[in-house]
Image (cartoon, rainbow, N blue to C red):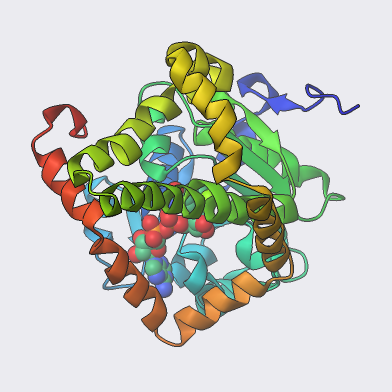
Length: 336
Ligand code: NAD
Ligand code: MG
């Protein structure tokens, strides 16, 4: 039998900020993750600079926060720890051009997603140790929670298990961005990359949006009002997921009617079937073989026409139009 509680969680007392405070950190990129890391590091009294291209639109925002902004090459050359927070599809190019020439033996290279390292698109130079510090949440939440004295759970990993200082530095980094306040879990580049891609494709993003759309379309095709379809298949999703987040499936099922609960047990497996499980296996196989990574990088390199076409198509879906109209009339859904 598999033990369910034999995993190690690192909290504040398991990590020491002094390891990171003794080093200079460059955060490359100032988007979702970049702004949160840079600001949390600064507030944890870590010497941090931000690396951005000269004409980056994010530069003014970083400077308005009092952060020092240099070019990626300059930031990397002055740093002991370089955290790569540019989009995964451009990271290898930025690394080759700006970062690699400015790394010296003894430096550390860090990532918030193992994608490029695991699939061999970024090959760290000899003498440079590599770690992962990946918050399990969007950058906005990483910053918001930190400001409130809380944190977002974080994954850490090291590429070279033999180097004794890398894990303690990764933990020190995770503490500085607030991760150890919530709990830090150790993983590997391989596990983080493959589970992250699988989760977002099959369940969180791809699976969820396809389920919602198919439910919405089924109701609308059968003559029901798109407003009702939106409430049933989209709006109420959050209420259900919040209950699961708080207390698991049982807690959610304790809050819904017995009618809903019986329908859940009976019909769920008829909608998400053994065939879906087979598809999930295929999706995972595709990810593990690096085929998805190659497909995505090739798409980016060829100008991203398919990506843009799909984005445009999805934005025009009736569910999106009805949703925008409904939300504009529902003050309670406005972000606070
Ligand atoms: P993002 O798109 O929000 O931000 C990217 C930043 O990189 C922007 O500031 C952009 O100006 C900058 N940039 C773009 N091209 C650049 C270049 N050539 N040189 C320097 N900077 C450049 O990206 P993100 O979502 O924060 O993702 C960063 C990393 O964090 C990725 O590895 C991603 O997988 C990982 N991650 C993201 C999230 C998330 O919630 N967004 C969560 C966990 C991990
Ligand atoms: Mg993810």
